[in-house]
Image (cartoon, rainbow, N blue to C red; front, side):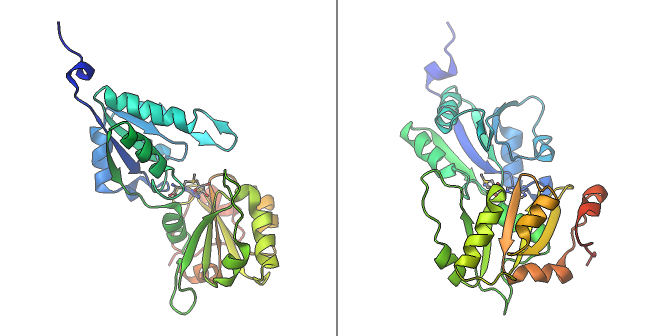
Length: 269
Ligand SMILES: C[S@@+](CC[C@H](N)C(=O)[O-])C[C@H]1O[C@@H](n2cnc3c(N)ncnc32)[C@H](O)[C@@H]1O
């Protein structure tokens, strides 16, 4: 009788791969190699269709996306699935949008896999802050303008209080992930905490894709602009003087219909 891989004790491996923010050419060579060699790809909602198109047709793909309020599977369910696939001897690619460790729950998945003695590997990806800011022509730091940058979210399961006073005092660039439904709250809290209402602020929708839209405003006007332009998910908020630099630094030309909707035409550098 032939033994199954499981009976022979040959265990697979799970590689957590950051797919970047959308443009498939922003994948690392290591990420591409892992995708090409995987038996099964377990992927999230934010992995772009262009990246998914790079997965060989013979590989199995399993969607485990989690949209706001619509979870196709729980985090525990994902963890258990990864363990099960590895125990079947599979090369598993766990594909996530952006980077696996920036609001990506990569740490939690590794802890669970280690508890079950599964071998793990990690391939970092370009996080949304790095990719979207670059494609919007907004440098996260700039000599004489901003000496630092904080990546932050107001979306937290444990309801930890956001340190608005501390954020307002930093006097550098703030990048809010998962903030689309809370734009008004974010801007109001930062003004209440001491930032001037005229502080430049931007929202980038579907950054690093052909559909990218960049709306530039101020803390006083961003929420109204988001409503007016019906900005959708995923969207990233950047606050700080660096936003103004995009007037001279913008270079990415998104698709024309998205381009026409923007409040201010961008020039090619
Ligand atoms: C759950 S977090 C995942 C972040 C991801 N791990 C990363 O490193 O970019 C999802 C949030 O990332 C931001 N995001 C990710 N990709 C984006 C994109 N292409 N354009 C704009 N925002 C994006 C949005 O704020 C979105 O709500």
